[in-house]
Amino acid sequence: MPYSKKAVTRTFRIDPTWLEVLESEAEEQGITSSALINQILKKYSLTWRFDEKDRAINLSHESLKDMVESLNKEQLVKIGHKTGQELSSNYFYLTGKKEVESVISFLNLQLGKYCGWYQLHYSKENKQYQVLLSHQISIKWSIWLQNVMETFLENVLSYSIKSEVLENSVKLTFNT
Image 1 (cartoon, rainbow, N blue to C red):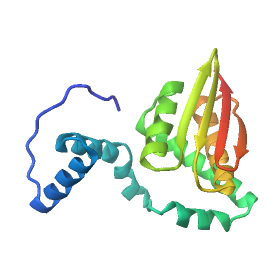
Image 2: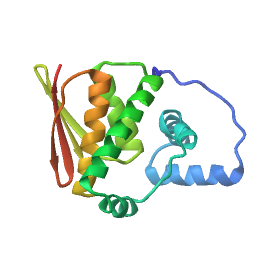
Image 3: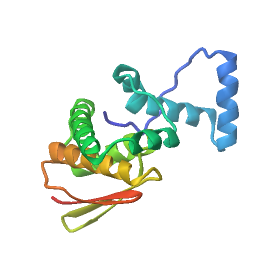
Image 4: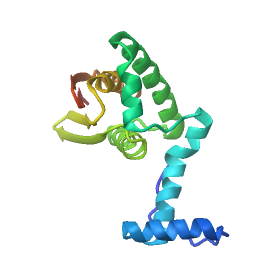
């Protein structure tokens, strides 16, 4: 889905209650109501509209941590691979792109920023990419995340992925 730099003017009817909430939130964030509405529409377009179809739920990091901690490593690996498979299918449906930069942008925006799975940092030197996914959940989340990302990246990019699990991060390395 290509992004446009050009804004389009539209007129919408908005319930005064929700308008007040939007204006208050925009003021708190130090942005215009229009900018906030654009952020909301972007999140909806890229993530939220699929959540209802996929029957996704929102959990606090603490609740998620408690659930993840109840699983053993074998379960985390199995569920991680399954999630990576589903994610790669969804990615192709959404974008159809196999370029590394597009994949990293997807991981950063959709799963990092909008879903709150991690903060993504990456570097590229020559043909080697290093991606660091940092979070504040647990080592077991790192194990699950490692398996999601290995499966996803191998399916989407067809590169061999090397990974390292740390307490609060996963480091992924691959050559293009």
